[in-house]
Amino acid sequence: MIENIKVLCHSSIKMDAQKIIYSDPFHIREQSNDADIILITHSHYDHFSEEDIEKVRKADTKIIITEDLYEKTKNIGFKDENIVVMKPYEKHVIDDIKIETIPAYNTNKDFHPKRNNWVGYLININNTIYYIAGDTDITEENKKVKCDVAFVPVGGTYTMTSDEAVELVNIIKPKIAVPIHYGEIVGSKEDAMNFVEHLEEGIEGEILMN
Image (tube, rainbow, N blue to C red; front, side, top):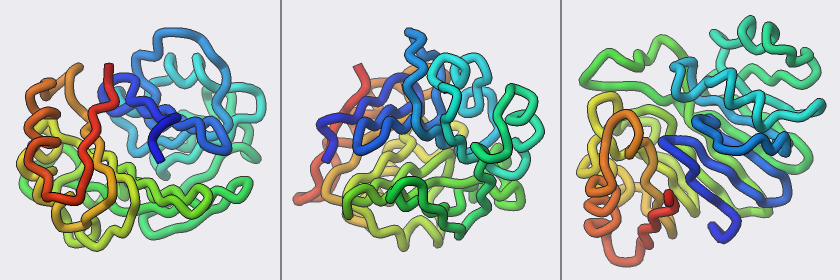
């Protein structure tokens, strides 16, 4: 389920599973221009990075964005037919890949207000469901997520801490859980290690960031 997936940096994920999918590309080291689909969770610079999008996009790349990013996405050259704007609780299908949005927001801080309609993603590829949580705390919505693989932030400050991420994952019980949102701006390798070490039996914790 994760053999062709890399956490590149911070919250940046590359999935090579039926299509090449990037989520929140950031600090991309090499110009690859290989993205079939780009998923953007919200508009902060470490998630919508124009420079890094340029490194992975190609002429027909589909980009999925939140409402507040439409003009910026047009301004960097994406055509309307390749832009998908999604609010929370919406669904979209690209080449048999089913994509659904889950609200992503803070409950005890103000960096990611619920009113902004920022999102996490559920991606169904060949009946395996991947959850990319986005920048979020534990919420009533994400406690109901059903998935096989969960990518959750562990760095604290702007998102949940590693202990809170453990709490969420132990509620939703994926087969595999992967820590993200650490090692670059906030959070450390120790946060990632704490996360994987405290998951309940039966949940496999995997650190995929080099």
